[in-house]
Image (cartoon, rainbow, N blue to C red):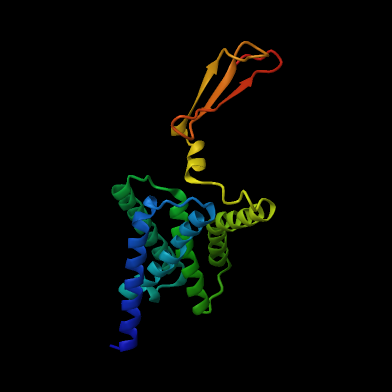
Length: 216
């Protein structure tokens, strides 16, 4: 067998295994920037593009199928693999299956199919369109987050980096509570009392009174 071909196979298998290992502990990463988190999620596209290519290395007969049957077989195998990876992540970290991750996996496979149809010189608008839409769905959160953070740094350069882990946890459900209160109700009979606990000894409260005689 061609040594170059053996090297390509070994490199692709190694890279795919490394990416799989990289994604398994993803839920443990302490990522506080939305853009970095969404960029991390975009890695599903790369992972399953390479995984789809590895399927051809292990099952070369797939490449001899007509494009439609080949695409269907690859998507089914990738879908099974994606759900298995999500289940393994849930077993390792306790995280449930995230549909957005599965969409990212299918986006990577669809881009591979689009590339394959181009290599075969078979123009299939449907495959190209599906690949573009799925990739756009996965990439858009990262692009919009980067744009939002750049705009924040331009408009508020001193406050752009103020979001510390304490500020991030301030509005999490486990650090606050909401209850109906009879205090400080200037209109109506009750007011909504929202409590946020950013620090152990500091408990600011937000009181929202009902207007127009409406009761909470």
